[in-house]
Image (cartoon, rainbow, N blue to C red; front, side, top):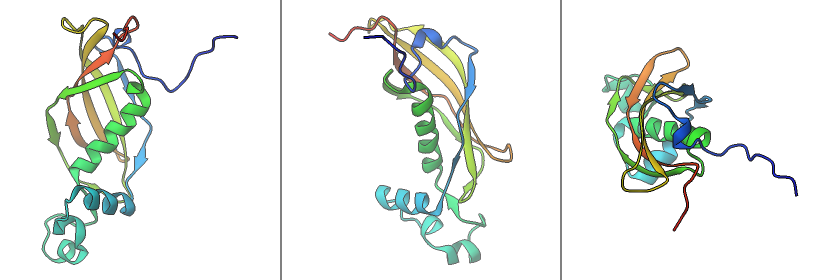
Length: 159
């Protein structure tokens, strides 16, 4: 049987040299996304559940999405684009929230590899750190984070 390439799989650590850049497709944040996220996480804060509070008392005007929701959407977009089948562990990160995302905003992630090296402790795996910037449709930077991941290499063999 002919061997053909499977698309949609992740990028091995050896193919992520420092300086490589790419961006994801966009994802629009919906009212349903906010309601489901705050419900399932227990983030039932009035900022996310009470539109009258937003109108009358909040410094943020409009139906705002939790920063954690925006981050998880970014991770989902990156998983679909680069980590499918090769991501082994999310080890750490720094996160900086620059501004709000509202229902109706469309976000995408621009990613740059800033560190990439073979793991000393795990043969066939590499450590990859990226600088991920989340932008809204108007070009506004809303979050920046720098995850360090353990990523499968081309010669990885499960023991």
